[in-house]
Image 1 (cartoon, rainbow, N blue to C red):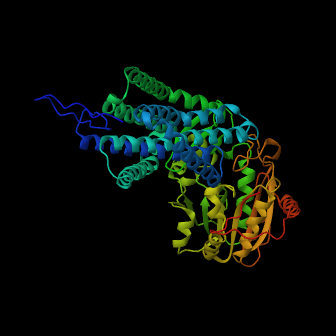
Image 2: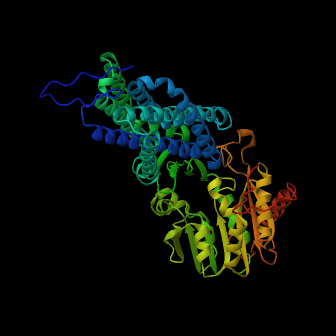
Image 3: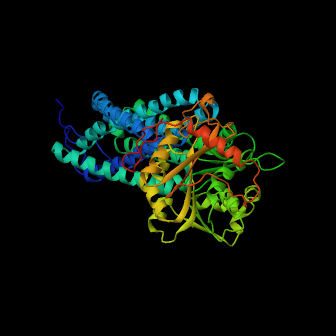
Length: 547
């Protein structure tokens, strides 16, 4: 049984600690407020760590739904285990909470750099990264979840040691501060940390705030609960954590440049984070071919982009083509091919990321590759999501070209849905044609034929075809799960219309570099040989793009 403290001598300030309570340097009401403020800050930091892992895993590994599910489920499970384990620390709640926050600040703050380092220097998309990264991601989720889960029982003990109250009221106060902090952290990550600091610096700053908040709460408010050795131990631990985070922040620029060279090679000319994605340009000078990467995926290769864009655009141009709509295509290369036909009167380009369009206008190598297409007065660019833009479109078009990322990337799934193609069909003029990039045929036939099935479900008749010769030097499927042996070797396309499109090139069209009518016919036959019958269409509520 804890004996009551001796009464204070006359004239001395009243001791704020009473039986079973902590001795505080401030009044209990102020102390309680400071604990709840610490809960608020720590909860905000914890949610930032969770969102950081989800965002980084989705970018590095792909398939955002799967990665978010893995991170969140492992983390919530670990929080339960951490809460149970923290019961043993309750007699030493102040020291335990200080140690937990120092560890959480270090692990959470450095998690983004560790994951990106493994991604950059393991090299093989189908080897170490595919398996090892998932284990590393799960390990970070588990460790961070254990530490976050341990916070709650320790904070509950600390707040009760300030002023005893019924458990229900204490839990309500604690979780109110926790949930409000989580709200602030959840909003700060996408709207403040990510756009202003990026993933790596954002995580390091969050770790710094976490360490300062945890250390200040324990060493400032509950130092009376610690032994002299315990105070020095926590002080040195927090100083070391802050020093490591500061050193990492000081060298994060060098780290990013080195990691970027490890991923993209030594020819990186432009690397920027737009509000939508990371954009990287390599080559394009001294005779080296230009490559454009969006969120780590090779979208344009100067070695073979003409094969892709000729095959995407010109089969759809056989017929009336005065008005053309391009969905995606912010690099301007599809627009370049459209403008080669003198019968074109207007081209509308709907691109989500204005940063890509700006780069296509201003970068000397990229603007030369697209023949300065965005400088043509016939071209009109709209910054919008293609799905939303089609819902409000009132004009009709002779040709609609869907130049979008591969199906199977979670963020693109709605742009390959039956609902999306229904909207595209609505803007087609009588006799109009829709050309769709549908991903590789040989390595992902189920995905390709699901796109074809979805187009037919939207009331369109289809003519599938493909073209080979795809540069596979950046060997990965859209979700980075394909090894080099199954890297895409071709592009698949589908020409669609309400009446059944003839798969022919316009005999009066421009002279093409590689695409000919015999090769187009042969490639259509090759695509048909891979047909997977009986596939259900993909819809918004039931996406079906998976191998």
